[in-house]
Length: 450
Image (cartoon, rainbow, N blue to C red; front, side, top):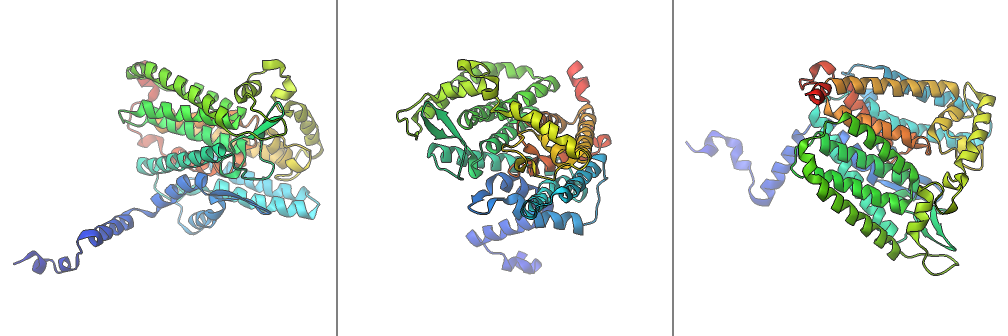
């Protein structure tokens, strides 16, 4: 008897291009939906971002918010609620309470809209309570973020080379009478672009160093770091540089350096030197604009921004007047210490933004919000270190990421950066939700001793 007679459905199978399409569709349908969820967040958050005239920033964090809400409000919870989940929810509630302190209608409406966006930024942290958490899901989220972040960084570099002004008032690098646009990525904000790039570089480099088994993993990690340094140079973001140094230092302490890494040191040094030379040469080829004419030295100007005292730079100039403004914000906190002045009111209470997440949280949401956010941070670190001592390599990645975020918080309001933080919260939720008892690998501490 023929196969077609034995299997009647076989006569309906198509061949050629149509057959490949059928096979692709069948494979796509077989993939669980939560892989698409974490993949969409990982890839789309950095890539889908724009600045609309009269509207402001709009991105995937806003567009995916209904899907995220549907997940956490319509599905049955399967994961265990931890202290971090409660603390983050309480922070959102404290931010909502703080809005009652705003007595002017227009700022109240604007800050309320921003509070709704906060929901879209924080909601990925709760995905782990409703979807299976395993290595495959984590790798899917990480790889989607690496690809999406790399795409957004490449687009940002091209935009900078072409000197396209993404938004009005975009930051510039001023050089003796002339200026050039600083790299600001898809939304034209050098601080947010630098933060996204530093977060991407930390996650990419630490993943390939501590988890990946590819033969070229050290080369990929080095390439990610070199790309970071180039972006830091063209964006002139000092906060992002501090971010990488803090995260890298913690990772070096926690990571057991393999002997094979020594074989890559010479190659890495040469590659890094060439990359830096290329970055400097490329920056000198960029167009400049301004009444001064000619072309100023962008490298020397950046050195004045990155090195205190270089070229006679004062402390106030080095910190872009942040150090002068912080005492004023601290004195303002005492007036509404409990509930704060209102979520996202910091930029409206002063001529300049606090550019400090610790001050912003305390100023805007008061002691209630600051306490809840502190409880969230402590809870996350506790869980990550539990995972680290259980031998989880993903914990090393996220500990480094968290330390870098805390360092960046000192000079930027990063916790609401919507082109990066939804992915960070999602990865934190996925890693911290994993059960310590399910880890079978030997403890990292034991490996280091051995």
